Length: 368
Ligand code: F6P
Image (cartoon, rainbow, N blue to C red; front, side, top):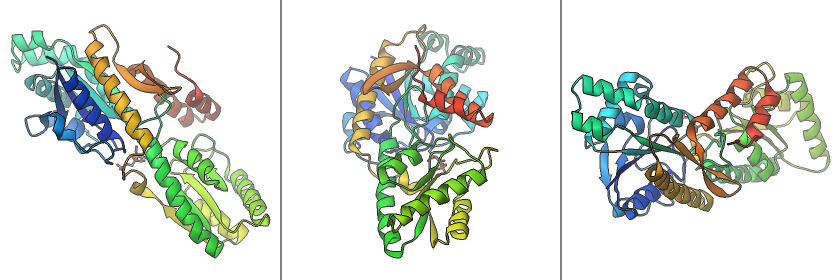
């Protein structure tokens, strides 16, 4: 019988609980023991029965729709150090775990991939220090790892959707609809800041879904003179057609062509000074990350959870660690390391002001 563990890492996202539920139940269904690692990589570094617990079928009852992650998460600095990964390795072996599924964003999955590639040298070092026995060394020679992508940002390459992104989008749209009612009543303008880190997906999709007047996303920067003229021209046109409110969505990672951050205050300033609009700022903040998962995320997380268990059971020392993705509505396996590399190359292109390349990389489908 195999021992499969699941862990959530990085920022929580709606649908992570559904993913954990599916992994635990699929593992049990396939005759394995299922474990949860509590508090992300930090629980793995600390180890012991407080952080690594066997989970039974009933332990995840009712988790399908719940927001957040019931097994906890953390942004863990210790796991970035070799000594942290060494401790994590020892704790997995002590708990008898031979496969690990990590649900998290690109940073968390990069950590998972590094952990697997270092595994042979970590167990070697533990044996040398006599922290594991020769029998444990022989039994746990290989760790199967699989990633599922949980993040509201939808910023991971090689997958069309990350678990949580559509729930967050729904919440943003709901909030903007509420804002629209009060904005219309007072003929006001609202600048709404949304999350997404360095990715504009949430801002872009919310802009389309709420018919916002203007959006700012990191992937399409312009100079201050350009964006202020363009925005004012469009807002004026909409007002002239009888629109009583103005909604401008600013991605938190919005930048100009010199990579300077564009803040909601910068945008408000222009709306007030150039168009004399009574303008308010709303920062949606963590409201857009909490709350129950929408049906799409529940189903995506469930299908991907089952696929992740199948992937670790199929894994061999020679197969690269997979990441479970969704591409054109199909649940597929992608090589984890390639997906992480492609994601990082988008960030690199933006930091080098290579915006056209960043957009084409974001759009590009992963080529196997
Ligand atoms: O990655 C998810 C995310 O919500 C980003 O959109 C945001 O920039 C960040 O996490 C906020 O992180 P924290 O909750 O640690 O403040």
